[in-house]
Length: 276
Image (cartoon, rainbow, N blue to C red):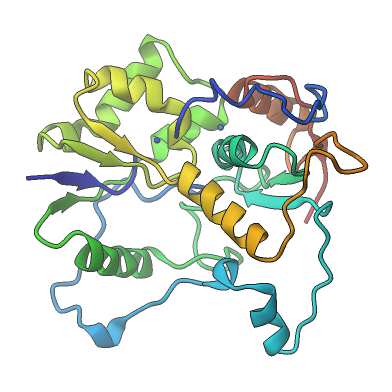
């Protein structure tokens, strides 16, 4: 029998330092934390309560044209990533491995991180009840006959935002956060937050490498390639400007974000402060 958790870490950045497009290091690790309580699942849930996620990311250029919006895109246009803080850097690493010649713009809203502990007002996200409902739908659709345990780990987000990725203190915090899952003797952990992959080596060490860890970073990267390829928007290495570029922005302290980002990405980067 398989057991899943819905919120726990991404691949290390060991392979993200390759530079097939010849970019210099400085120009070039899911997202908001949840409550530290178990998701509440309504036993009276029914299909009429269905909440569907946004699907714009899966729609082609032609789909947007059909609804009256016209986008003029170019293979040299950058890919944009938005996150409450540093967590999305793990997705950025996966994207750069899959699409090494693309230009990227990353914005971390570090002045307002974390989002998961805030109310709905001003936060562009569903509330905890809706998240629980959507999670229930995913479980029903894809995990029939499998025991699933969902647990929030906001303390792990804090570790990553502070750039604390290893050491005895970090291991103690991670072990405590995962205790509800370890007590259930799970054999699979699904990482439901983009921050968590930065702590993957610690998690694998705590579980003695006996638990299969799943994260969505590589899947997001493959889907991005698929969408760009369908619209002939993949930037090629032989472009006029072959060097890939990363522009890193944050709403909080740029020095602190630069230090954390450099640690997560594995190479030096410099962030610029801006406001929304």
